[in-house]
Image 1 (cartoon, rainbow, N blue to C red):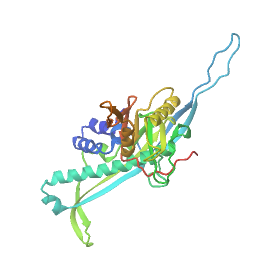
Image 2: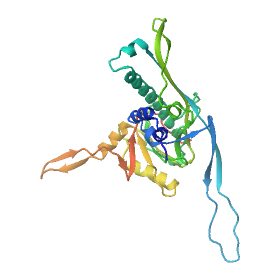
Image 3: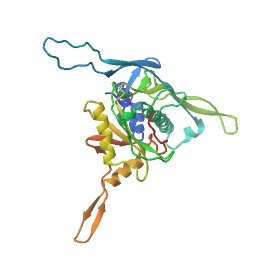
Image 4: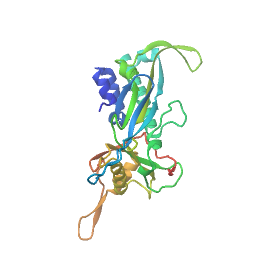
Length: 314
């Protein structure tokens, strides 16, 4: 399974690799999700939805023929775009030097773009330019654990996902800038200043087709309607979440569980213990930061929000 970093590294783009390495510090989806390249901006996949019917038969009696079930799925990418302009005189005079100044700007641009993409991985697009679905809309109702929160716009979720080309992955057009250029190409041009007059500038853009696909309808499970008090993330919720995922995937566990930082903190607090230090005294011991559940990595991300709508079954 190749990540975006692997794809860039494989082409020997040291500058782009450095930008991606800085980006994944704050956008873990870029580091964890498999990435694939395609020609064009749309693609199809055939997903198996059921197995053939099998069973035991008696001597001299036959069985009905059956086939596995398949579903054809269509996917479309969106244009991931960003434009940065810098006053040429300010860049040339920057104490960091021209190259370091432009590199810092490039890192910020790519990080912002990857944050935009990561948000769409979870929540998709509701009629916007991206036109692709996210995990929240793709997960089956049968794979949702309802934590019970009910306050509008104050909910959070934890997602258990399977990663790989046959499950959940990011998709890029093969000519995306980070995959077809050794570094972002800075050009000299003219920008319009705050006083609406021209200013000599350096500029670059991040323009490439990107998207998200999940080829296995059982590769996403969700703990929804988590809040900051009674209905928070606990090991009990995680146990039910992983159990639902495993049951739907013939015993296979998810590859990762993504949560908000706030819910990871609440999970950490729930794991705290009381330790007796004497016959009549005890202290509360804070648990370590939760990094896994039953060997499954727990990954906190700012791409998930604590302001979701209340989930209800379709």
